[in-house]
Length: 116
Image 1: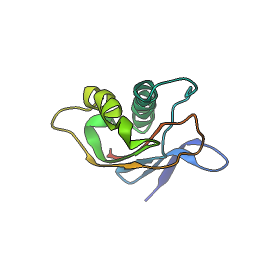
Image 2: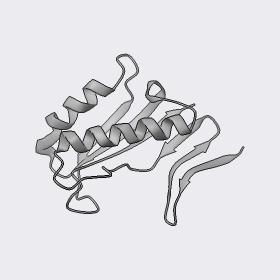
Image 3: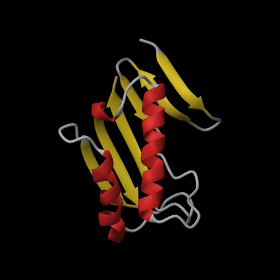
Image 4: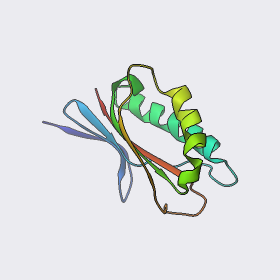
């Protein structure tokens, strides 16, 4: 079975396709400085849409999502964006945790796995 890597970098690929599954790296906002949790979430969800499209799939085929919040008190703000983006009836298995992220400017990170 082949492996296809999308947006390959020195440390990681942004997405890896193996068989009929695509694995996305944890996505953070491209422009996090001064952006609210909601704004960062919206940026990340747009990035996820773009990467899934490059892999030949979309958010209706999400299998799982892991969401990392720098502050769990922002759970409702993140969910407001998530709930407007996710497709009813196509919700993935999901976990949301509080975690210290790679840089202070990041308030949200989302990793997903989807079918193709």
